[in-house]
Length: 479
Image (cartoon, rainbow, N blue to C red; front, side):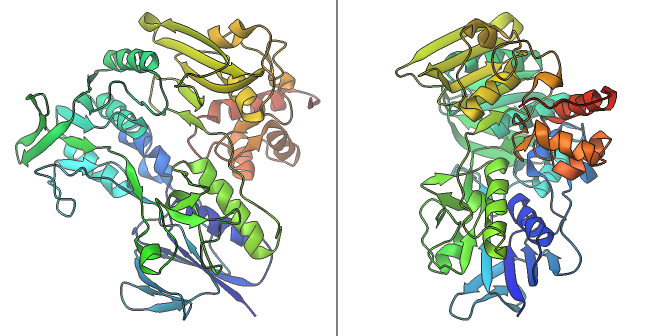
């Protein structure tokens, strides 16, 4: 009997799951129902699209298609009937399932400010979350001279940098005392603010918005300190909230997100949830790497490829994807506590580094600016390896090998197990194996391994490894 798997959501998590299921053997029918009318796209590249560095086709994801996959875009699901094991679409169609997967993602938060109606936002006020949002921002930015961004988190800063790249005088308004307070400490936030100022982005910190007024001539943002800021465009980047409406209406257990276990099952064993809408062990993901890892685990479980597969979160590394700004933050870097701590700051050059070490292991790091050791630091953190005795090499950027002993002058010195692509957990060894199997160009290696298809931050590293492989007469992979 053909198993019926219905995936609600054709975002990055849902599309990846469909692809994982399609790639595995077995008799099943996969139906993907996406509320957005587009092909699946890479949401984390929207800031790059906003900056004009890529075009819309460049953000599209390769979708599973062909035998056994029924992909429907622009088809919102309005209800889940658990007793009948059916979902109901906006036009009344009922689609049966043997297993249902909720990949409904998250929605942008519209702050409860006078002048903002989430159901009817002014044309010049746009959240930054979806491809349609990006299109609206670009339309409003066409001919505009200035922009305001409400929210100084990761996405807000990427939006601000993108708008500044287009020549708009851009101001970020953030209610906290420093930027990216979840990932950075105050010193790093101050250095980042200085770097942004050099790119034409002004930052207003420690002040909340109290109201918005918008008309055909522009937008006014009123602040708690009595000031008002005016611009041609206001971008809202005030966080996201998991889209749990379907799950709640169906009676599933929901806290902040849809609660799932290690096998990604909800309180109904015939329903799973992955991605931004899922809450595992009290934690929401919000990033692409965990969502794609969940898709792989769930595909293994559903197809019987590995019935014992379990989702185990990996250490999270946050990268700011903004032209001219190199930032990596990982682990418990922004707070204090027991252990060893090293810092270095050079605000004039936009450089800051902070390492937190406990029991000879790196438990957190912030690296801002040009630091050749960033790859090594990420590897040490990701793999839990002992840090080198010469801490200064990591702090000040003298590049080391992943073992922390010798300079990494060539990819030949990088261990086979070293993770090159954090988003897809692709190791150097996997890149080498794909090259040896016939993938002799960067695009071919990317297609074979998926390296570089997430945030794109590892693309240069992938290119370097492919160049090394193509020049080497024989490849010796160190372990």
